[in-house]
Length: 117
Image 1 (cartoon, one colour):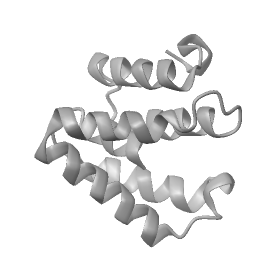
Image 2: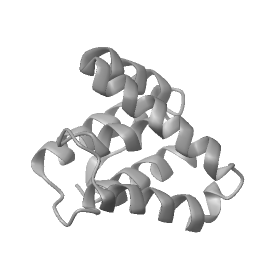
Image 3: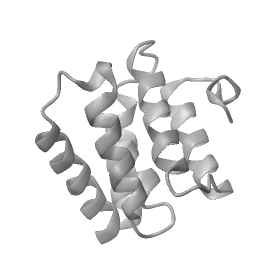
Image 4: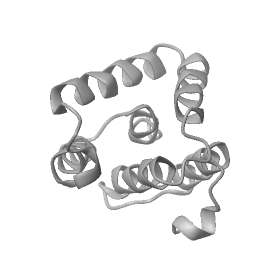
């Protein structure tokens, strides 16, 4: 949820299409069905609020949360897939969004070219 919030706010505002993509991800990715959707949305909202209040501190908080999954062969690609889905939700996977996904890949120890960058 932390990484998804960061991607959604890359263009400064969370678009309706990004919210809908988040709902779709939570409801349809079998790997995420173990999580309570309402709690996940609350986590997303909390991270988004943190990022909006102080971009640097919010980003640091996101990177710290994401780093817990660094090198995790199961969770790391799932995080990136969700982020790319959120980034593409508005029909424009911008260079700025690609840069953020690249940063997340480095933190997660994933090869960006293997995740579609």
